[in-house]
Length: 304
Image 1: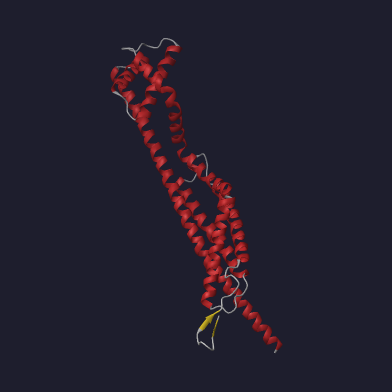
Image 2 (image 1 turned 180 degrees about the vertical axis):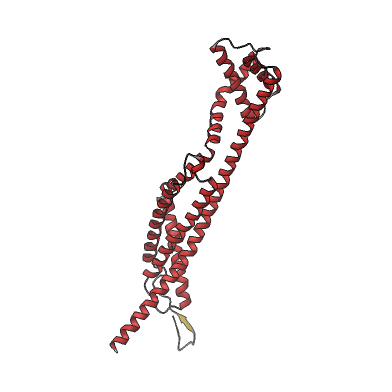
């Protein structure tokens, strides 16, 4: 607001002593948005867990689960931010002597601040619980889709250190010609040696020629197969192991892509929430001023 100084003929601006930020409506809107976010998150988690099943034919794929989670995150932000923003705009007091454009700007800013406060509130105070709840379904889906691959990788990693020394000891004491197993102990010893050879190959990614030749000899000695048949059997087993390794890598890559997509969609949903809260606050402030003007006009008309 300004007035003209009579003596100098200049304009003097008088600033208002009150702040343009109404923290009461902002806090009310942010608390409402945070509560709605938690409620909708729990609801979505409950619905999401119902589409995960240990049976492959009855469970949704990891990609489907990630997409549905992303869509639900956007809906959470849409609904909670819209509700919180609208209440922020609707509950503030009427600004007098302020241009209409400034009113819209303040309402929009109030909605954005309410969204930011609600986001920080959820992240700071409820972050652990909400994150754990959201990730429960994703972890379950990941376990269903790539459980075998994860179990194999974990077992190989845990056993690698324990068997590395034994593998080299086997290499030092390896006989030139494997003996035919005649007792359970010798059979168990041969099986353990073969297991360590295969584990070393899985860990290093290569099967040395010496190990390969020894495997052929052990299989021929244990099974009574001819040298050619023993080599064919080893080739078949190694091919199956290679297929399992590729399947594990594909499952891990799918899980990585699904996680990246979910993170991107979570950030995108937050941006949507900020926009919705700002627009909703402007709409709520507009309705608040319009309703007050309508009620005031009706009251004046009644007294006339």
